[in-house]
Image 1 (cartoon, rainbow, N blue to C red):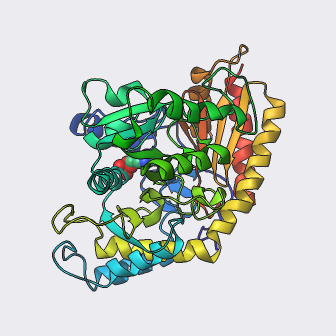
Image 2 (image 1 turned 60 degrees about the vertical axis):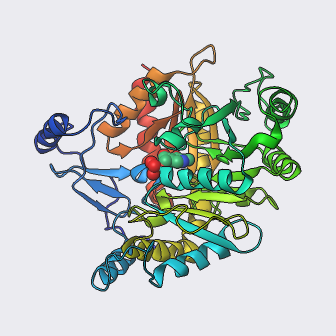
Length: 450
Ligand SMILES: Cc1ncc(COP(=O)(O)O)c(C=O)c1O
């Protein structure tokens, strides 16, 4: 299952970044936009294979971020490379918005089979997560003939103007763009570790009912009458906001609110989907709860740019010309997505569950060793480790130091939320890889707390 070489450990042979990497970073500073939210450490990639990334100076890193939860099957999985290569030799593009090719209905049919949505579905293809979200917003507005949306504090749904109206995980994302394109109201996201209602720490999601009260008793009775709400947009595990899973009771209650008021439940599985949580979708952890509309991207294409908005067939009822995209659903990207899903179904989702649990146990062991680890949480291979100060407040500086130490020791991990490190490795990660990663993480924490 693991298309890696025999490599066991990272190999760091120069100071980081090395001389060739430095040249690329300098050219980038001159010619590329400064708006990318890159971390303090500077990783320059030249090659990727399996769970390994090699830089131009020959340093090799163990990748526990997977290009921000994208390379689900690992880097350059041979079967993905073969599927893409074969497709590029046959048909690269034709514009599925004006013509037809087999790959679109093939992937649409597959998504209809696997997505937790009631009955038949239809899919609109896009090129990214934000585009899939834009599609969902337009579709919800069109279908319900309503204009308001409810989103969560800490959420991230992308940076295009519609998606940005929903996004609220960091100040930098909206600073400078003033008024928003859409009418969105934000509500507290359920968080058992940092209760937004100051009810302390709970583990059963009970106190998170505050979120539901907020919507039903505060919003619906004041600024946001339910009959004006087109959709509630939910990350079942909040991603950029800190890898925070929502409790089942809240997910279920949101479904009930939507049913009661004819509101679309839009589930954003851009980061949490495609096997990452140890089930095909994070929503699958909440038995019986179905979405009306789902947004997918990142891990679905193993690195090729593809997004998808999947909706109940009766909801995707818009007229010809209402929404389309030149490149969305490109045959090469779809070939990669179909092969990705096949690999996920043939073992990688299961691996995400078992090795993810193993990694989680290892992180929990480290929590008993370091009081600076306030919380370990998540599902499968979507795990967050939150760092705290003595007084329990988030310790962002410590998190950033640890991130840098990991890099210098050859482990790639990335921050999210205010002081959390996210673990989102390729789903091919083995227990042996996890042992190496945990050992480096342990050493990096020890070096950073002194
Ligand atoms: C949950 C979620 N939704 C949407 C997006 C936006 O995706 P993209 O960067 O492909 O536009 C992201 C990206 O991180 C995400 O994590």
